[in-house]
Length: 154
Image (cartoon, rainbow, N blue to C red; front, side, top):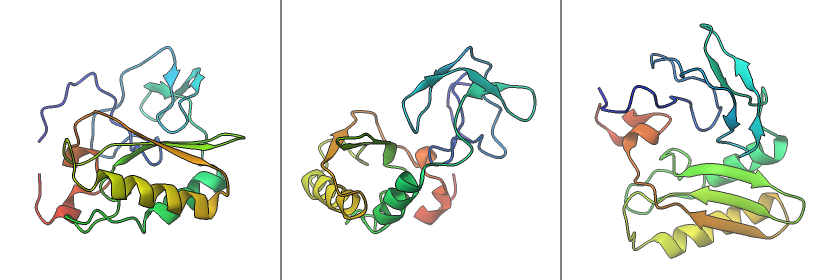
């Protein structure tokens, strides 16, 4: 069980779809998509609730970037930045790629290396400058697509 706010949207950050077994997102009049940051009208989801409009599938570039980021490992936890849910947003723009990510701990000693590895992995797929913004948000296993990868249940 988690102690998250019941009004908080429970969407998988990788797909934008509701997490199975979680309460449905609260109705909204629109909002920013977590994957794209674009504001769009609300779209219906199963169960009658509404969620921010997200495309049915991520772009090929975003999928390729996410695939490349599977190789970027957290040196202490030995899981990828994708498996840990550290990559919060990917924006492929005409002149650069913007990655918004978080660290597992404040003042992570491996942050410079992780940022460098994320930048290199992204640029290996999309050959244009990459900017990595580190978010100050606290990390939690609840942000992982599969928290069971840590070896214990929540």
